[in-house]
Amino acid sequence: MAPAVTSAVALVTTAAVALALAASQPIGLPGCNTTCGDVSVPYPFGFGPPHCYWHGFNLTCDGTSSATPRLLLGDGTLRVTKISLRNATVRVMRTGSILNTTGEVVIGDAGWNVTFGSSFRDHGYLLSSRNELVVSGCNVVATLLAEVGERTPRIISGCATFCTIGDGGHDIGPKRDLVATTGKHCTGTSRCCQAPLSLTSPPTEVQVRWLCTGNHTGEQELAPVNVFVAEEGWVDRTGLVGAKELQEAPLVLRWMVTKELPPRNRCADDVRRKLCKSQNSECRAEQPAGYTCICQSGYDGNPYIDGGCRAVDLFACSLQTSMSAKTNSLMGALANVPIRSGGTIANARKEHKATTLYPMAVYQSPWTNLSQKVSPPQ
Image (tube, rainbow, N blue to C red; front, side, top):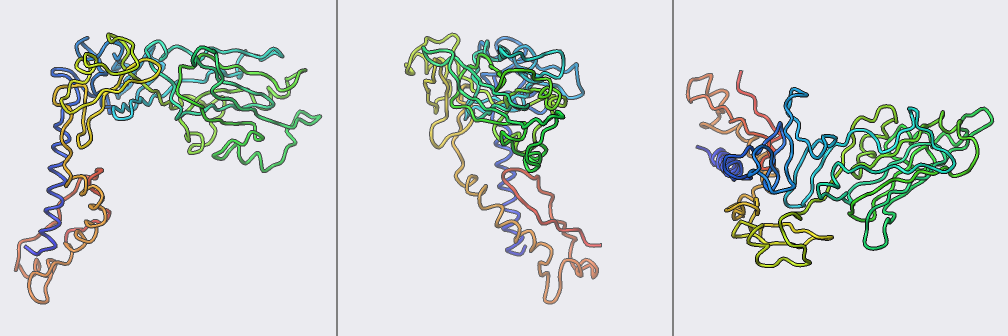
């Protein structure tokens, strides 16, 4: 076999072995389901029998409402799309807005206070600072409050929108601002604004106020007030979703283990032994009061189960970064590998001088990036 072919096959085979090892690495307890639809569910999360999850991390795998089972958190208004043990985060889709005035809701001069909701706060989750507050409307300001320390509630985000309402009830502001409304960024002067969250915390409520007193019928008709929190960058990528169209928005939640463990500001040995089951794991004390586990340097996997942290294959790691650059040229060489002087696979097949060679199909994964495809000879 030609050197180019041998090298390509060796790289692809190694990648396949690495993928197989990763796929066989356990993420949950024995006898427990670890997938719901297309979402992986690693311990301490779980669903089904109580022994499959740590207390407080039980989820619901709902297979009745759609063709693909949905992984639900809390009261069912949050749909889980990704769980990260390394970052201690959960990405969820939240249904609806915090405040929406397209219906019978009318904001008076005194403003409006809306509870953020307890769909995840009651289960020990925090709203990650990787989210942002988004407000649409005219001449309205919204602030997001949270329980932070002794001086509560405390503002963790806020922004205001501005419109210039003419005598006819129309927005007579600069037309360039209107482009931002239908584009991918809120400027504050384009009937919408967005602001980052100052820190990770448990949110309590949103306060909404008009910027001026008087009759606000014009503002309401021109741009109904819509307030929601979404993953940072989501509005920029998708454009502001209209108040009447918002179905789901992504949220990033921060989690930590709080139940069945003593509240301390450090990881004592008894906490580490009870929570971080893998031999090659470490315990971390989290604020305000909880714990998480991570695999030690050089290991990866699930630190919450026995044997969950496995040694990282350094060759496989280097393969991840070098595979993309090397395989394109190697796989391209498969299309023109000399069989004999002046011949190739294509004409060798015609002359029946060699067995037909078809490049193997390669699964597209983080380990491989084979953009070139070699077609079999006609």
